[in-house]
Picture 1 (cartoon, rainbow, N blue to C red):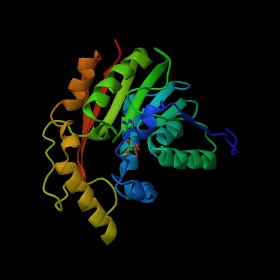
Picture 2: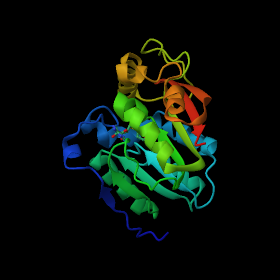
Picture 3: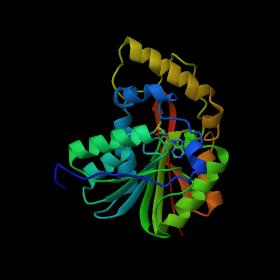
Picture 4: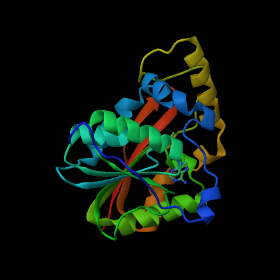
Length: 249
Ligand SMILES: C[S@@+](CC[C@H](N)C(=O)[O-])C[C@H]1O[C@@H](n2cnc3c(N)ncnc32)[C@H](O)[C@@H]1O
């Protein structure tokens, strides 16, 4: 792809959805400019690379990244598999504009769509993969159920959904300020504070609690996926992360 890649953001929200609230990536809209720096220091890139490896994306396959934010997961997809046809979906227009700028700089051309996880922008049975990173805990109960059903609709038979998020068995987060993790660099003081804050939020968050135990596995199995299971986990400084995969029958 040429360095002048044309990257547009398509708005698939209905007029009613324009006022629909959502929880932004860093919890507050004004923290968005720090999101990439913070996640880089927190070692989130390694999680993305692991998702891509677990997903097993092949050349030219169609991939939707749900809750893509500033695009770091789908950039990892494109780094591993440059011919993949990637769509990033997120309700946050500012995050998508950042993703678009990054895509232009890198000379890649993902399709970017502003919308919610419950309506994946793809024809029935047209996707080989749905991937998602750290986004499901941002989605409310109805939205999660709708996401799982819509992922099933959009994937071809044998297509896979691969998710990483906080949660999984034994995922109660340890006391804030006592990290147990070994992923990522050691942050400076301000970032340590932010890490502590985020860790407390993750640990105490009722939305993250939906992922505890086999929350994501059950969500996918209930929607009709085969073989939903935790395929890996990581003990990260922000909390336990679960990698879950399932296939469309
Ligand atoms: C922590 S960020 C993760 C971003 C990216 N996947 C990553 O790994 O860096 C969570 C993302 O979920 C998005 N989000 C919030 N509510 C959503 C919804 N209902 N549907 C889809 N995405 C949503 C947020 O806008 C945010 O970009």
